[in-house]
Image 1 (cartoon, rainbow, N blue to C red):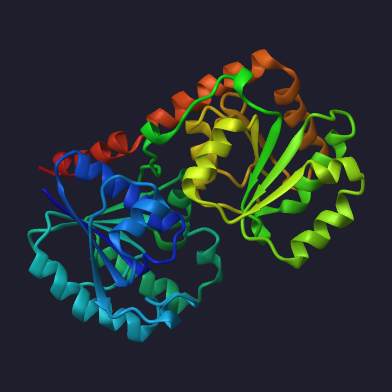
Image 2 (cartoon, one colour):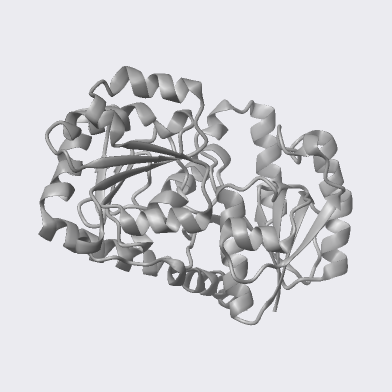
Length: 369
């Protein structure tokens, strides 16, 4: 089978969309399907994709236009001019390539190839739909009505938003992960590390620092690792919250690190903390669980990602330092609780393995035959 993924913007901007595309594409290739990716523009080469996304197999990448640095930010692909390029060039390429299945990430206007099935994946339509004008919503509704044969929502939250704002029905299929890549270390091999990944605003580093501060004076062996490209504002926040010199010495800002290094940290850490204000379906929580690392997260992380009380804990209020502290302490101090949740976390991740999810996409097509 020939499978083509589309990315409305550029696959050079590594994020949830791109990770999903290359993880699932890798699974389809391992299942002996022919896979390509059609993106608005790109300059990334296969070796870079392998290194950055940590995948074995890289599909052929096709660009609608030559990549320019200005395409990177703000991301191209959504303006009326860009959408007209998708309609003209994108449609032509899909018809020429003649895939059996197109999996669209970021809906765009297309002239459909009659022998191809089209699936649109709704990654994060909430809360963005609430900000759109009535005309924009009508245009989006037309696209969803005319382009896809099926619509997939990655969470039930996205499914509800599609129904509420666009009247569009969808099937829920979560994102996926190649669980073979993740090492599971026994508790005895781990350090008392609380791991926080991502430092930009919605990741809510402030709550994590406050939780660590309230724990570090009680337990002098606990450490905090913060992954992501930090700046002076992050360091000021750190100095304002973490006052104790000994506690300060147990906080490590890693900066940007390779995916291989991040995988090492997952398997070395005791807990992942993610008090995010908003998330779609973050790979961080899934990657941690694939490493057998329990997670303590806010309710912004959907229940499809973290099963409350089973693979970790979900806290309703991302600013509730006390509740985060209590759950983090429980996983630091109760070895049996940690072992049980570690086992559950890995089993949950295996249900979302990319081969499993790829088969669910193929099942959609079989059901129509």
